[in-house]
Length: 444
Image (cartoon, rainbow, N blue to C red; front, side, top):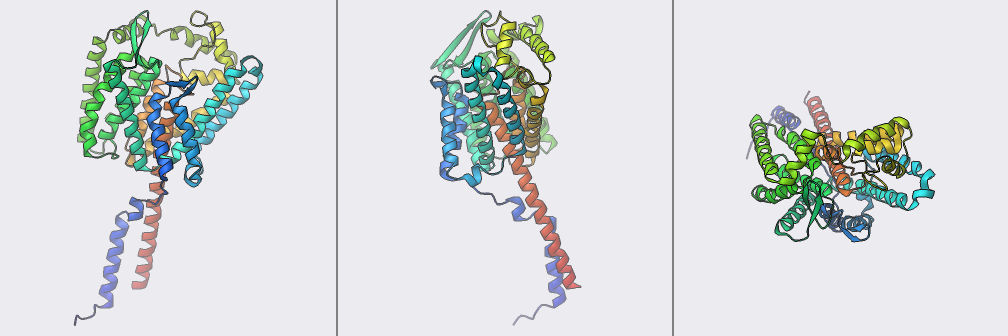
C-alpha cells in the first residue's frame, strides 16, 4: 500500500500548480465562449460576402445582386436575433447619428429631388443595418474566414472571366479603353478587386484563418486578380492596394517575417510598375495624373467642392442637393447630379461639420478596431483592408456601396473579438490569482 502523502507536500504541489496556472493563460482565455451562428445565418452571411464584388451588377433596375442577398441576411437574422441583433458596436451608433443628420438635411429638398433622395436614403439605411448584422455575425472566426475566402473566390472568378472575354465590357475614353465586368464602373470594380487581392495575400501573410492548402492556392489566384485590376485603369484602387500592402509589410511578430513582407512589398511594387507600363490605359492615366495634374475632372470638382463647403461649413447643402449644386457649378462634366469623387468631401458638402463629426468618429473607431484585431487570428488583415478602402475612397465615393460597409463591419468584428478575448484573459487571471491567494491562506 502506498504511504499517504504528507499534508505539507500536498499543499506545496497545489500551490505550485496554481502558480503555473497563473503564469499561463487559461483555456477560457484562449477560447472564450461565444454563441455560434446557426446554419441559416451562416449561409446567408457567406452568400452576402460572396455577392459584395457583384454589388454594382444590376438584376432589375437598381436592384442588384448584393441587395438581394442583403434582404436574405435581414430575414435570416430574425432566426437568431440574440446573436445577429445584439447590442451594436459604438461605431454603429455614430454612423446612425450621421445617417439621421443626413436624412434631416434632405427634408427641405424633397419637393425637388424626392425620388432620388428616397433611393439614396433607403440604400444608406440598408447599409447601416447590414453593418450592424455583419459586424455581429463575423465575430465567429470560422465564419469570417469562410466569408473572406468566398469574397476572394468571386473576385478571382470575375478576373478570370474578364481575361477570357466573358461578360467583359469596354469603357471608351479619350485616353484609351478601360475594361470592366458586366457594365460595372471600372473604378468600382478596381476597388473591389483590390480588396479581394488583399484578402488573398493577407490570409497567407498575416492571419491564421486558413490552412496550408490556401497558402499554395492564394498566390495562383492573385495573379489574374492583379492583372484585371491593372486593366480597369483605376488609380484610386491601386493607391488603396499599396496602402494596404504597406500596412501588411509591417505585420509579423518576428523581424524575419517583417523583412519577408517588406521584400514582397518591393517585389509587388516592381511588378506593378512593369504591369502599368505595359498597359497603355494605365500608363496614360498615371502619366496625366503625375505629369499634367489631370485626374479625370477632379481638378475641377475638388476646388468647387471646397468653395461649397466654405459657403455652408456647418450645415452643408443637404442630401442629394449638394450633388445637384455641384453639377450646376461644373456643367462641363454633367447635366445633372455630379458625384464628389471623394468620400470625405462628399460628407462635408452634404451635412457640413455638424454631421461630419459623427462620421469621422465612426471611421476612427473602425480603424481602431482593425488595429486591436492584430492580436487575434485575424492579424493585421482587418486594418489592411480598412486602410485600403479608406485610401481608395479619397478619389471615389463609396458611401452607398456594399464593399465599404462590409470592410468596416469586418474590421469592427475583429476589434470586438479582440476585446472579448482580452476581457476573458483578464477574468481568467483574476480567477487564478484569487485561487492562488485562497490556496496560500489555507497553506498558512
